[in-house]
Length: 271
Image 1 (tube, rainbow, N blue to C red):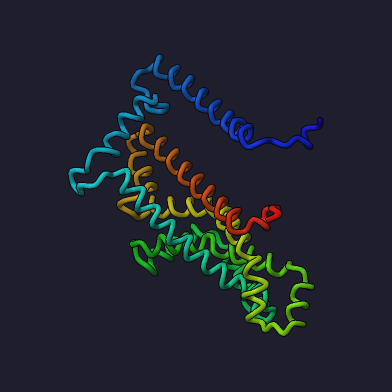
Image 2: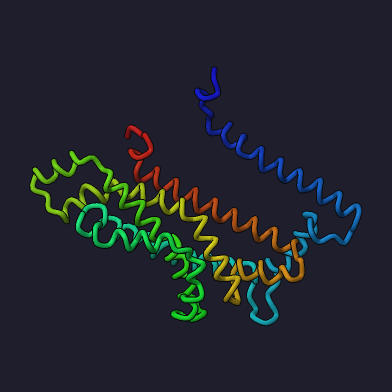
């Protein structure tokens, strides 16, 4: 059987997906062991024992100044900012995407504006956001919003615009108004696409969040990474990066599960 025709079962898929990760971990362990054999005080590639020891203090020992567990406080602060940014962006993408996709006059009027905002590098707007909104939480959430909302709006609007015209014609024949077209024809078919747009925006959202926290913050995963880098604390940086990757994977899996559960028809299911 040709490889292009092979179908991989769920168990084999998990196993095959884990193999590259295990291989990378093995390569890292071999390289770290070699560096520490030559220089026991090497900081570039810390051993797992060193990372566990460094992270134990952040995980289980309260900070003398704030009294908080630093790792969990950083995680909560970052997830709160990420959640707000994704939430506002998702709501905006749904509302504006529906209007742009269903109503040609609105698309002709505001489509170029959305496109213009989408092509501006969001990081370039960071100084403007700090000046306009200060160094607090609002500017960080706004950076995530400006970074991903225009893409999500354009994606949802393009999907709605590409819906078969027969659906629109049939709904209008039955007396549907523009409002009913949006709610009963476009909205149900836009929801799976919206979730897919959120999944695709997760990576950029994390980039914008880490960038904002690195520049102006006193707590958060990005703040901690850039704080300890001056001490070459790779035993903290690497676990933090791995934790961010794990959080992103969990969020992506939750979104995928939600989409398949709520909209099985959009994933090829027969029920």
